[in-house]
Structures are given as C-alpha cells and as structure tokens.
Length: 119
Image 1 (cartoon, rainbow, N blue to C red):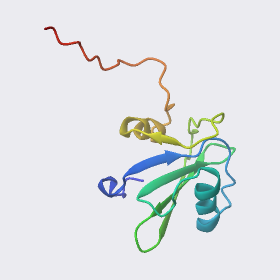
Image 2 (image 1 turned 135 degrees about the horizontal axis):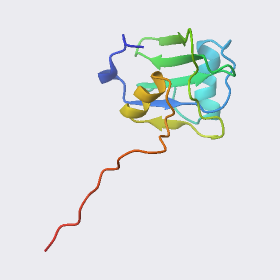
Image 3 (image 1 turned 120 degrees about the vertical axis):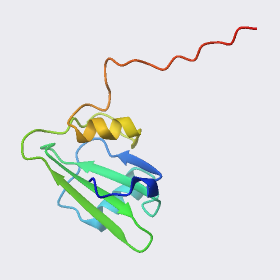
C-alpha cells in the first residue's frame, strides 16, 4: 500500500470483525454503506480483514471509479480488532502500526501533555 497518495485520502477506516474477503468492489461498498453507515464514494480508504488475519482488502473511491487493494502477508498476521461493531477511524500512527503487524491499540505509549497556562 505504499503506492497510495495519502494526501488525497481524507480518512482511513477499518471494519472490525470478520469480512468475507471473497467479496469484490460491489460487496465491500455495500458493507460500507449498509453496515458501517458511511459513504463509499468519499475520499476514504476502507480496510477489511478476513478470519485468517493474514490478508486485508482496501476499498477507495478515486473520483472515476473504485480502487480495490489487496495485501497478503507471507509470514505473520495483522492485529485486527474483532469486538467493535462500528467502523474505527485510524490515525496516521495507527495505520503504520497496523501495516507493521502491531495492534492499533498500544497498551503503553507516551501521551501528549497539554499543561495549563499559569496566569
């Protein structure tokens, strides 16, 4: 997925749970619209994962048609959330973690601190 121009993508969502990856563009667009309640014709990349978690599919509207992406890991599995029922919007850091085989929910991280201003 390094060939994508991320500057043209407004958001990246994942569909937690199991998706039948035999579905093509029309089937995945229906999931986006009916189950996730999102617009498949937006500048949004939607990611789906099957039961084996070694493959993901992506669906992206490019203005003149859909782009269907497929990534299959040779060795390893994606850390894919299974219990959520709604689409999850990913940050840039979370998409990097996901594609590196890490969980999008890191248990330990340094949080940004916004100190209160002293008057």
